[in-house]
Image 1 (tube, rainbow over the protein chains, first blue to last red):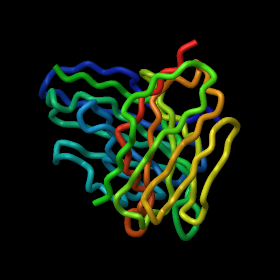
Image 2: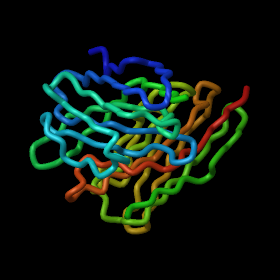
Image 3: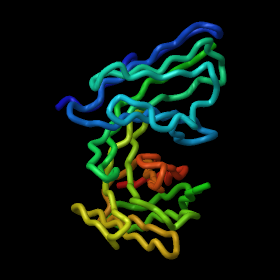
Length: 117
Length: 114
């Protein structure tokens, strides 16, 4: 398997523009996670899905952020409008969950480096 | 709210040394704990996962231990090599209604010099 795939790898945009980050999880994994990493706050979970359904979005910072998972092989994280403080590395991760609970390792993608000017 | 702390923040050792990285967490009711490695500009690579019922896990030169009651985990690296240089992150899964939700420490930056 190619692992978790994220695109784009780098994104530079201007304040106010819409940004869409994309993720393809490992085939067969039924959990998908979006994280954000900054120097100040470290790694933070934004939202995660189980079987394409959002389970916990308490980490989403504002209404400007939204995430979707239309099918088992694709998810998007959208920021509209973007602001300079959104500059960070955004990671997608996936894992194989077992019935009755989550036990498995999370596998991370390479990340998208976002710079909002 | 779960908080995860890693000590030291940075560590520099000569090649061949055995070393220990520390991780502590405030809520001992955890589901599992994971150690990750992150290379500069890259994503995270999972090293070891310890379930709450386990005391340790080993993979090659790596050994991770877990003491739930004291809220601590250690990552032991034997015979360190320059290729081990990276940031090591500890992450705790508190489980319950937060299945899958990992809380990360700030990491330990390890440098192994030849």
